[in-house]
Length: 238
Image 1 (cartoon, rainbow, N blue to C red):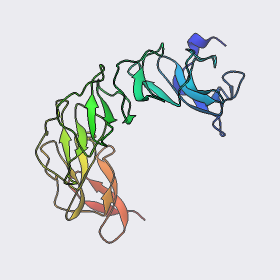
Image 2 (image 1 turned 180 degrees about the horizontal axis):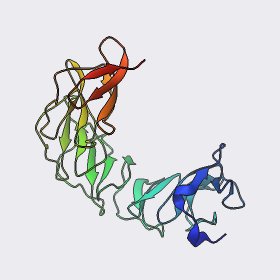
Image 3 (image 1 turned 120 degrees about the vertical axis):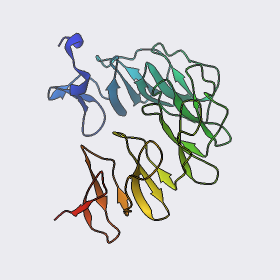
Image 4 (image 1 turned 180 degrees about the vertical axis):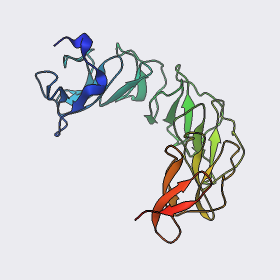
């Protein structure tokens, strides 16, 4: 099989999670303790009896070093953990920066959320340094330049890549923006907000999902499942 013609999206993981499958057969002739999905440019995080590392499409390690934990490559950087802490490496296993963190996520849109030794969350740039001065109780990945962050008072807000609040409105819970709207929870229940941070309808629900082509799956305050449109109109399912 020509490895240059293998499509990463067609590679799956075996049911026992120990090897990769391509076209209904093993991608390579070996098994691991555990494997994760392949990511561009064609590497996957795996673990065997010697430790955690990354392999290529032939199932061979792409570097010599072993880690405690490894994760997939995102934007050409992979999160790893060794005895010094959590950080990111490039495709040659070279650390991107000297700092070590209590935990790191994956790079998205040139930023990555991390947790420091004091339990605080914030985003870093590729050099490992804070992208802004603030720290949060929790923070998520950026999507379309906006991320969710939870403040010390327990409320959630949306921030930009400089750590500034996008609209100034706080909620008990927040999701990322998807197709222009985000799921939010206030004192009355769940709803959807627009980029100004305001609800787009008056109704509230026990919970709701992001909009999918103009409709969102939801549960109303009586416990019935249904779909809502962008005006908040609820139609029970079944």
